[in-house]
Length: 161
Image 1 (tube, rainbow, N blue to C red):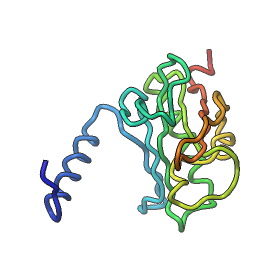
Image 2: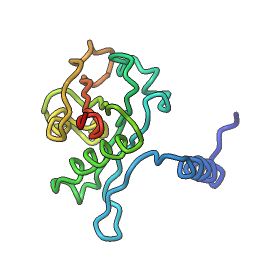
Image 3: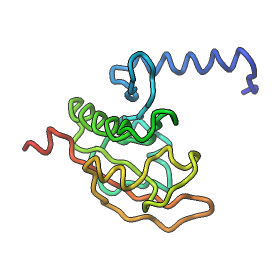
């Protein structure tokens, strides 16, 4: 395939986003302050996220049909106000309503601060505050991998049983 630049690339991205938006289930959730979007969290069944499914950094723990939060981001000007925590809780609730038995995340292990380029998958303390538990400690690091833990939260439906 020929490399696309300029308007062609934007059209390809627009088509991809339109396809995502027309799916039966939303690919994620947005946080707003008034009319201003300030945060995003991706949430989907693990089987729909091919990069997560095939990654050596995030191998399956078991055969549970989990949903996954692969990334979360909050606008820098809106950080420190609980938006990320609210997004995680909303994503777990959304997945539960869609029938997910549990939600997994693969945040950075530990609580050390990091640059924005390594923060998009969240932190272990953040997911702990949202009710997630570690189900697998960090795997042995390869190359420039960031050490990540596998954490899981049961969906609200599952907890009610």
